[in-house]
Amino acid sequence: MKLAVIGTGYVGLVSGVCFASKGNEVVCVDMDQNKIDKLNRLQSPIYEPGIEQLMEENVREGRLSFTSDLQEAVRRSELIILAVGTPSLPNGEANLQFIERAAADIGEAMDGYKIIVTKSTVPVGTNEKIRQVIASRTSFSFEIASVPEFLREGTAIRDTLKPDRVVIGLDNPGLEGVLTALHRPFTENIFVTDIRSAEMIKYASNAFLATKISFINEIANICEKVGADVTEVAKGMGSDQRIGSAFLRAGIGYGGSCFPKDTKALIQIAGNVDYEFKLLKSVVEVNTGQRYNVIAKLKESLETLKGARIGIWGVSFKPDTDDIRDAPALEIVETLIREGAVVKLYDPIALDNFRQQFDHPGLHWCSSAEEAAGGCDAVCLLTDWHEFKEINLHKLAAMMRQPVLIDGRNVYGREQIEGTGLEYISVGRPHMGAYSEYPRKIAEVL
Ligand code: UDX
Image 1 (cartoon, rainbow, N blue to C red):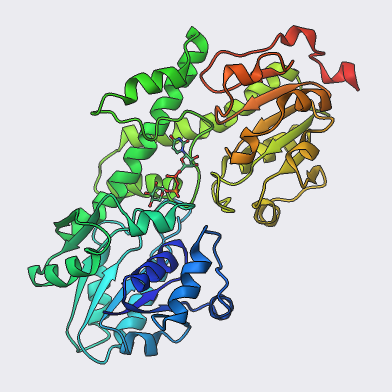
Image 2 (image 1 turned 90 degrees about the vertical axis):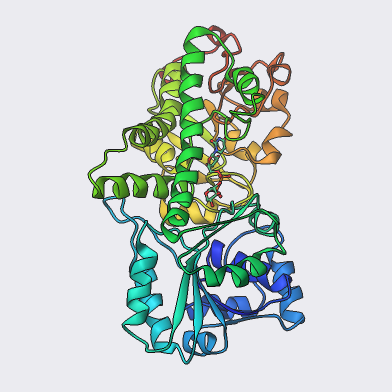
């Protein structure tokens, strides 16, 4: 099919590239000319393993192109995919200004029948609004459908090429054939439903996954007090198929561009119809608290943060991405600076993004994990990048002023810590190391 994809963020660009690789003729549109210039040089504006290679292959085969000319793209396409951002407004509600603007532009550009598919995450009822906006701008006939996207950053291409399921929301059964044919090369597991239910499936899925994370994090907090090990608990729970083992990794909580935004938006969606989503409100609250537990643990171990040197390993919200949107590291580092600590930061790829968001004279930017740890009173591992798993922990203990390791992602096993001399504090697991041997007060060391 001939497709236009509006928006070249994670969802738009990855979808565009993957549809092209299944033989469709795809034009990706963005109003940001700089992004389009970059894409035309075959450079991806997002960090996603494997994307540039796929872009290159599809452009070479003549199936993929990039433009800022929305009108031209709409005219040469049979099906238009809306994949613009829906960021949070200050009250948590989804900001639909980009969606509405794109819908208006599509309406004005239309020169014949088109199918418009929304992949952006939008509140229930938004596709109806999109229909109205387009209808007010054109007299040509068109259809709308909701096909929410479930890809994860870092594994976006794999998730799109081999999704667990595709959800197609439509109100006109006549669309089912064309949309299932478009998605069948990716999976046989296609669930067709009405538009409102499809819109809700996306929010409900993200809210449920966020709930699993906050649930296991609360279990972890209790484990710390009763002497149980949350990783064992999660394994024991997860092998029950009704529960499932995914998204039961305890840690410092979820971040990123989706869970924080979508949980808050669903609370608002419910609030707008006079329903208080109490469970989801708690999920959000627990998630925020989990970040501050890192600070509490540091204070417990060092007694004061004033003058302490703290190494931070990882600032992206998860590994294999340079995305720092709503990353726990932001709040943790800001708090450390406010409390008077000196902070040494290392991340394999996300430091530039972090620096654009938060800079301070008390921050030191390091080019390796070792450099960030050298001379520190504590190291906090905030992102489970693979390279941290390979670090020589004996050497780490030797290069620190106080060998305290706060592992916010439960990366290391007991056998790796034993004999290293580290005071090891993870999430929901027994602490390790005889911290009474170490000077507990920064003031004594200075
Ligand atoms: C998520 C959804 O998984 C995806 O379906 C949706 O389309 C977009 O939002 P993403 O934000 O890319 O994807 O990352 P994901 O891998 O789901 O992780 C989200 C956050 O949860 C990360 O901060 C991660 O560290 C955290 N997490 C995940 C946990 O703390 N514990 C877990 O067990 C799993």
